Image (cartoon, rainbow, N blue to C red; front, top):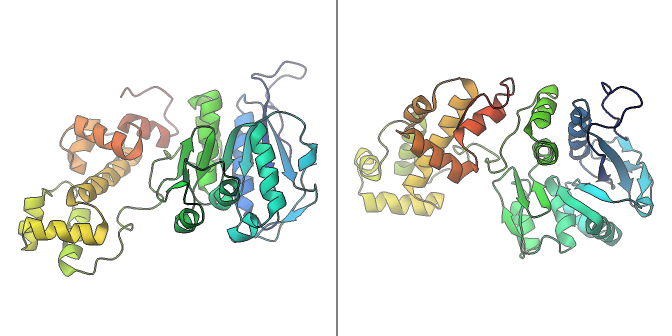
Length: 342
């Protein structure tokens, strides 16, 4: 499973860029796509001038069986890794408790991480990585269904249950399965710039690339189903027409309750304020408009309820960590890089 150099590169010439050594750790019971997703991204990047050299490694050099029943044969054993590692990728297994109970695996991750410039985990791979203690005091992501388990098992880790991926220093951790592709595209962009990452994403027919701060799921699905009928009515109204007047007084008047009572309902049932929920709905509406068309940013701002381009930009920075223009460029992979100023 070793990557190949760009096939368009003439034989006998020097690589376009220096070799970047990637090690993907294999172990029993891992999730198959946690491995193949990142490997396919690196292979695609090599088609466009990258020089990633990937090696798969298992603790004893023997084959492992994935959750899909497919056996993977590694290139090396862990003890045979005698070279500097630029990026270490740690996949996950759904029964994460078996991974963290494997002391040899955790010790192997510690040894590899010590020599790696960047350490990445996919989905439940955050658990054996956290077991090393290397994530203590750091932010980390995992699949949303496992976030509470990760926080409970490793209270020194600051778990982000919403983000697709999180980078903290040389550690980058991602949510479930396909988020490993987003994570790896982000690593390619950090290594070689957005052009090669964008081309790799287009080759794979995936978005380039969901920002790490983007939610794992729609904001409409994130609050638990409200028990109070008044709040259900309010949430439905906001989702149905994000551009309407959804200030607290207007929401309360339409619901027939006081602003103070509505505020208590939001706090109790969503854990936030009405303004926070409205902003999240409007950001999601703006995302859909940016992904689907070429409307000017002031038009997107008006149609999604922000009113002004500057308000839209501030909300995107706060919620997603990127500007609306950059967000559109990342999702509209057929657009040449740099054609939109933001």
